[in-house]
Length: 367
Ligand SMILES: [Zn+2]
Image 1: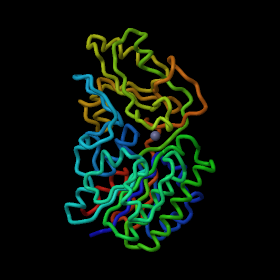
Image 2 (image 1 turned 90 degrees about the vertical axis):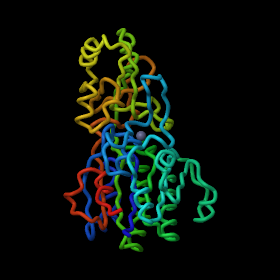
Image 3 (image 1 turned 45 degrees about the horizontal axis):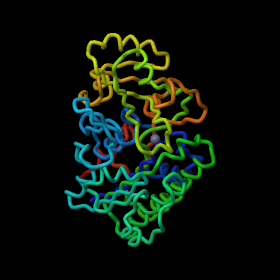
Image 4 (image 1 turned 60 degrees about the horizontal axis):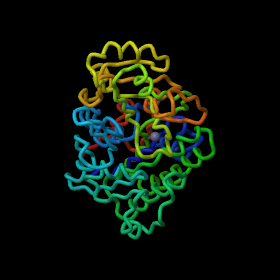
């Protein structure tokens, strides 16, 4: 069976992973691989994209359209943190069914919660299994909002590979650092340097293992945050506005600000009034019906409300006090502008041009 490691660096826009920040991995890619920019799925948020990378499929098939759900029929809503949302089989499950051994390493606990089925070994830095810490000789993890958390989880994955050599290892980080620091900053460079050291060493000792480094989404500075719900309320429009990025990691994005918004209309007769209102809002770059968004982004039409709003490059929809906040301190994602991500591949089975999206990694694996 083929040996595979996939590292998903949460929020790693291509500008973070470069020849300057990861010289050892770039040198390896020149010898036996490639580096290129590929695209993630929309909305460009964590849960949606782990589902795609792990299955090789679009959200229309995975059924995962955000970090948070809302059911307009029952009014139920909540964070997506446990099993039961993912509809497509994952490569962890496929590998396990083929008789392989699998491992999932994650900084954010929810990744293990939602996608852990099929992982023989599962470790999160947020809530680590003490037995696994002992088994791999690991110290207690640092706080998950740190550069050290990335270093810790990548080293944990490498330690597991050295000792038990699982067939498939999926490892992912937290985007806390990239939410707070631009690509040329010292903390961002230090995070990538840790990955560069650790994985270059692993690649040298395991030349037969396919290694992929990619991201779930990119990251950009956001200067204007719009409380679209408050604006719609004031205009007398009865809606429920859901930012698909919304999660419990508010240290990453304090206002739950993201570049895409699902809008559920509570009053069908307000359809035209809503459309006029949303289209006249200067921060809204595009208003799509659910059918249009489903067709363009391969989303399940029945899970994304009645309208999907897209923010401009510097804007995000968020839960700010009042209706509008101008800030220099927000870096976030969720929109079309954070779709570009890097793919660094060593030992991939297909030529570079065959990989257009991160999900193509899974599509070309043999199990
Ligand atoms: Zn994030």
